[in-house]
Image (cartoon, rainbow, N blue to C red; front, top):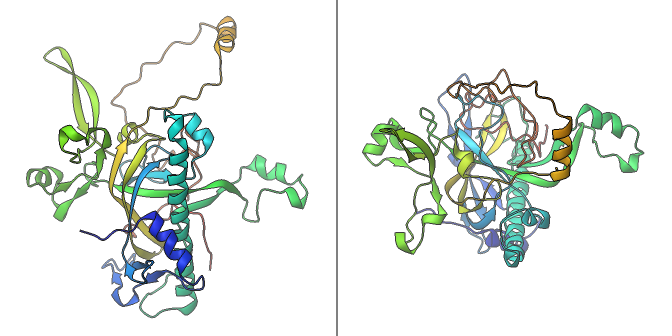
Length: 386
C-alpha cells in the first residue's frame, strides 16, 4: 500500500522547515527515459519532505472536498484521442454553497476543509515550480532538456483576455489595469486540474492492468475501477467501495427498464457533477520533460463521489417568461436530431472555448501529448518561460 500524506501534514511541513529549502525533491539518479526517439520524454521521480524530515511519495489523501466542475475530457483533443477526463478544484465560496443542496449548518466545516486542501495544493504547486527552476538553472546532466522549457502546472492562475477586454483595459489608468503584458487576466481563485484516467481503447474510466483488452481484464479481474459511489458505501455494504455506474433506460422485451452502465469519458460528467462531494487519493509521481515542456504528472488513484444535482442557472422569473410568450413567434419547428450522430463539440476541427454553466472554462493551447506520453501541455498557466 502506498504511503499517504494529508493536506494538513503538507501545511505543517512547510510551516516547520526553513523557507529557503525546497520540499519537493527531484530524484535525478532514477530518471526514466522513454524509448521513443522521435519524441524523447524523461520522467523524474519526486518526493516531498514531511514534517519529520523524511522524503515521502506525494500521495495525498483528501476527503469531503467539493469539486468546481463536472468531469470532462480536455478541450484540446477529440473524444477519439482522449485518454482521461479532468476535474477542477478551487476555493469554494459562500455563494457556491448558497447555490447548493448542502445544509447551512455544514457550510463552515466544508469551507474550512476546502481552505486547508487548497492551501496544500498551492504549496505543492509552488514547490514544484521552485524545484524545476533550480533544475533549469543548474542544467543537470541526468536530464536532457528540450528547446521548449515552458514549465506547465496543474494550477491555473490566469486566463486569456478577450479582444474586447484588452481594448477596454487600454482606457484604464495604470493603477486599474487588469490585463497583464501577456494579455492575460488573473483569476480571482486559481484552478487546480487533475486527471482521471480511462482505458484508451474503450474510453472506460479506470485502469487496465498489464495491457490486456478490457474484456480480458474484467474476466481475469485485472481491470481496476477508480471511481466509486460514496452513497452506496454504507453499513449495508459493509462500507466496501462500490464502482460508480450511470443508470440508463432501455427497452427490453417491450418494457422500459433501467440498465447500469460503467463510467466512460463520454458520460463521466453525468455522475461526477459540479459541486459533488469527493474524497480519495491524488498522486503526483514524477516531473515529465518532453517537447511539450515540463509538467508535473498527476492523477486520481481513486475517487469516491457523492454526486450533487445539476444546478440550473435561472435568472428569468415568471413575468420575464410570460413577456417572451407574448412576443415569441410560431415559425420555428423542432429539428429531429439523430442520437447516433457523433458529437463534434470536441473534435479537432471544432474546438469550442465557450464556458459551461457549471465551471469557468479557460483557453487551452494545442496538445501534442500523444507523442510525449502523459505530459500536460494544456495546463498552461503558472508558466515560467526560459
